[in-house]
Length: 377
Ligand SMILES: *[C@@H]1O[C@H](CO)[C@@H](O)[C@H](O)[C@H]1NC(C)=O
Ligand SMILES: *[C@@H]1O[C@H](CO)[C@@H](O)[C@H](O)[C@H]1NC(C)=O
Ligand SMILES: *[C@@H]1O[C@H](CO)[C@@H](O)[C@H](O)[C@H]1NC(C)=O
Ligand SMILES: *[C@@H]1O[C@H](CO)[C@@H](O)[C@H](O)[C@H]1NC(C)=O
Ligand SMILES: *[C@@H]1O[C@H](CO)[C@@H](O)[C@H](O)[C@H]1NC(C)=O
Ligand SMILES: *[C@@H]1O[C@H](CO)[C@@H](O)[C@H](O)[C@H]1NC(C)=O
Ligand SMILES: *[C@@H]1O[C@H](CO)[C@@H](O)[C@H](O)[C@H]1NC(C)=O
Ligand SMILES: *[C@@H]1O[C@H](CO)[C@@H](O)[C@H](O)[C@H]1NC(C)=O
Ligand SMILES: *[C@@H]1O[C@H](CO)[C@@H](O)[C@H](O)[C@H]1NC(C)=O
Ligand SMILES: *[C@@H]1O[C@H](CO)[C@@H](O)[C@H](O)[C@H]1NC(C)=O
Image (cartoon, rainbow, N blue to C red; front, side, top):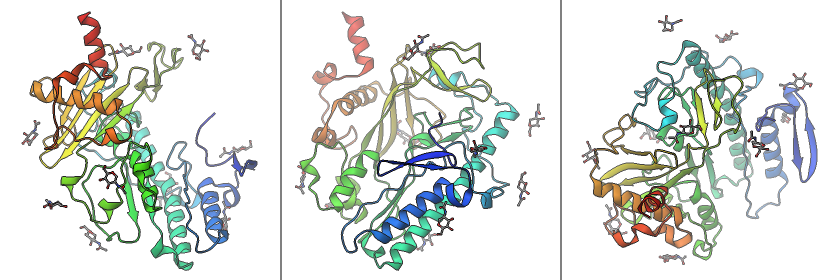
């Protein structure tokens, strides 16, 4: 019933079921994946190009650490950033239902989760080290690209939400991304915007395939890593989307809550609902660092953050920002929600090549505009 386990699971190995129990030296999933990866590297044919993807459930719940790491990070707790335990009063309804201040038991729970997550990552650290060393021993390290990334961010206490990953804020949408490989200078950091949709095109590009021949929405960031591109020739915005999940029956542990919500723990604070459905334009241009989001909920709620002035997203400026900026961002959102392939790579709102065409205002798929159209009928 859980989608992540560390013991007592079944793997499909080339279509054959492989059952695992709960003996650390044989079954701890992160280590099993490490051993299988080393075997793959050892027994693949030498000198042929290869692709290997290793996905550990760690640090997903239930956060089961390896025995030797169970006491690590005893003094670590979740960061107390300026948005920790702060009531998001100007935010969408799911944030407004959170309880501020959180109870002490909620804070203890989230600090404990934070520590446990770090403990599970120590085994991931071991996996990475063993894979890199194996490549080195085989003489393949200098000719191999290694990407290290994740599929979502995480919050622990921000805006009084105990813990989850389903919000539009920086803490949930930013993921680590580290790459090493041929022609990539070590220890450099790029501020250019890349997203998970770019991983496929980048890997195809490395393999020598012309990405223009695909219908993929993303872009290869290989030239960015090789220092062949600067920000004036790279995108200035990306689309962020999420479709909320919610149970259609009330949570028996939280009888006061109606149906439509889910992940209501601890303290019956819900982390998701079917109407936690949003789409955002995240803009990072030389002069602007902005986020614009629309919700598909009864309030057609809008959130806007000036991330330059407000990196912790404490103040929603949707009601005070220049109306023209709102219209442009809404226009761009519609475009990014309906684009495909090459049309996703047109200039963003803060790109000097951007053209605002008000006649296009009513051709897209924005929820806000589809409702506006309904009310105008
Ligand atoms: C694994 O399954 C065994 C047998 O059902 C059970 O005793 C044990 O507690 C389980 N361990 C974990 C970590 O799930
Ligand atoms: C992984 O391989 C090492 C070295 O061969 C071995 O000691 C360890 O028990 C293995 N771990 C698992 C979970 O299979
Ligand atoms: C860490 O905490 C656990 C549980 O409270 C305890 O058993 C362990 O001894 C502690 N370890 C260290 C190194 O302090
Ligand atoms: C909650 O924790 C705070 C800070 O640690 C403490 O001052 C307060 O007394 C605690 N409240 C309860 C009800 O335990
Ligand atoms: C990498 O960059 C950081 C920050 O710029 C610097 O502190 C560190 O010494 C650098 N490390 C190496 C190995 O160059
Ligand atoms: C892909 O298309 C872009 C834009 O049309 C063009 O600038 C680029 O040269 C093309 N790349 C290849 C490898 O054909
Ligand atoms: C960016 O690159 C273009 C050509 O590739 C160059 O003309 C321009 O001066 C560069 N801009 C910066 C800020 O380096
Ligand atoms: C809830 O959804 C499930 C799956 O779609 C359906 O089988 C069930 O009848 C629904 N229950 C209610 C109370 O609507
Ligand atoms: C979202 O859905 C929940 C659960 O059905 C409901 O209580 C809430 O009023 C809705 N909020 C908005 C803004 O649509
Ligand atoms: C964002 O904040 C910065 C720094 O305070 C300011 O210069 C800029 O004009 C603001 N941008 C918008 C769009 O409000």
